Image (tube, rainbow, N blue to C red; front, side, top):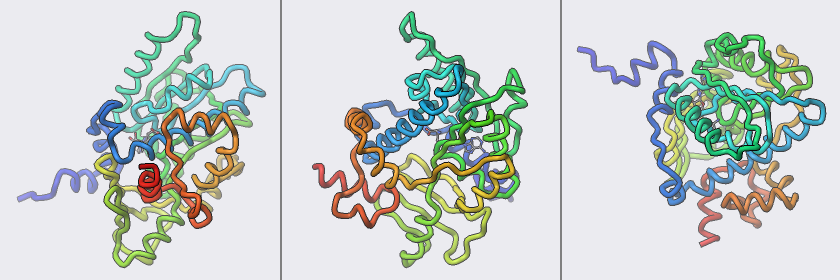
Length: 316
Ligand code: SAM
């Protein structure tokens, strides 16, 4: 009798990629009203604010030397960043993701955007690709396989690739090999140092609160690749992820002629950008609650749901 669960079967036959794809494919779009009631509403808005600032600044930089701006959104999901690309007035966008249903929703969102945009607005053109970017060469699936990019944006995605060295390398190749000289690879990924610090401080293999949990298989042994943990965020994400040891990632990127321009924790980034009036205004507009309580600021090194809970209580 075969009593392996479907999820376990996927893991054995395909590695974890298909588990991740199935997970994202079956996530429901719950709409703005339900989302705003969710306890993680402000945290998601904060993450979105952070991405908006990052994307906005990088596009400003690129535009200084390029007339036409092409972007690759690697792990685009349902298209959560489409509006940011529109605001950044890019010219071409390629959206790639392993989850076919998400890509379909992303494409639908783009079509809706196109339909509703002002008659004189020149909305970017877009192409959508379903690909496991840790195992397939994404550009081979493009209408023009020779297409090049000014920016590759990989938001909350790269950690899925750190299952094996080959996968991490292929995703990096997908991100960087089609970048024009002077192009940028930007992204956000969980802070492995912070995760391990919290795990080591816990008296079990997991840590978290009523909103999120992170569970490792064991403590004290952190292989460079395949160091898996399960992340659960109030029913929104419950998938296997892998630690990204940043110094190794930086080294690996040299193979694709990349050099590190900057790396910051969410807190460092927030602290720097919030001084700018426009960014601070955007934060209010996006209902992104500042997650860092003033008295705790020096102790915190990254953004996490615990801090949001704290900030929410202060705001109530
Ligand atoms: N970038 C989007 C955003 O910021 O809203 C989505 C982020 S979501 C947390 C992670 C995304 O990574 C999911 O859409 C998932 O399908 C995608 N992903 C995970 N593994 C992938 C892979 N091997 N190749 C391509 N996409 C992948």
